Amino acid sequence: MHSGNGQHWAINDVIVNEAVQSVPEPLSIALLGLGLVGLGFSVTKKRAK
Image 1: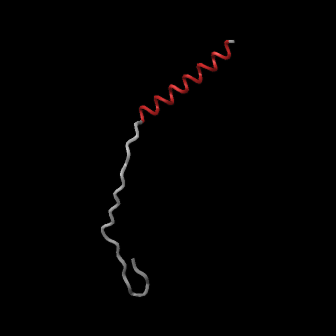
Image 2: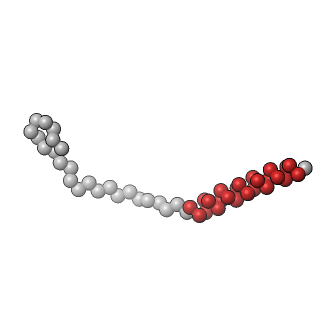
Image 3: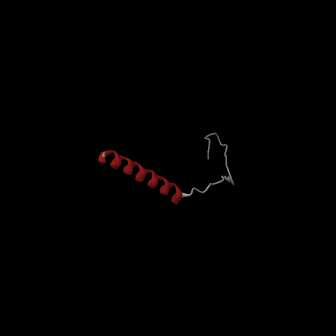
């Protein structure tokens, strides 16, 4: 970087360590699917009455 007045600024060796948590995607997709199946089943059950 150059500031225009003859001074030079530098940033070196920037390291960012962030903890990444794993997300169990198959489980969340299975729960969503199970909820949609249950919702669909309850709608068809109400229509049959």
